[in-house]
Amino acid sequence: MSDTNKVRKIWLTIRLNDEEQKRLHALYKVTTCKALSEYARDILLQQPVIINYRNQSADEFLAEMSQLITELNAIGRNFNQAVKRLHTLDHLTDFKTSILLNESGKQLLFKKVEEIQNHIKQMHEQWLQK
Image (cartoon, rainbow, N blue to C red):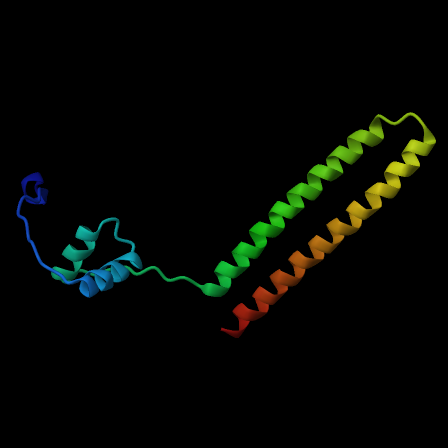
């Protein structure tokens, strides 16, 4: 197609009521079209329109995983700080106290890793059923 054919210089004006406009925008929002005019042109010229498909279970899984990743990052930072603190200790009593404090962090880490494993297993079972 030449460049002169690509330039759109002809206007098409249509009138819609409020309900029609809401419906048009709702239909447009679920497509991959970048502009409403692109969507309208595709529909009017009977071109294929690609509609976004959202997998609700995958969206929920990703939301849970992102929350767990944030928590794991925080636990990892705490662990790194604890290791640095252990390297600076001079007395045996300080060392014992730090080890006891780190035990709760270790348990929290194991709990979060187990949660991740359970979520992954649940998603795997759901996807196998489909």
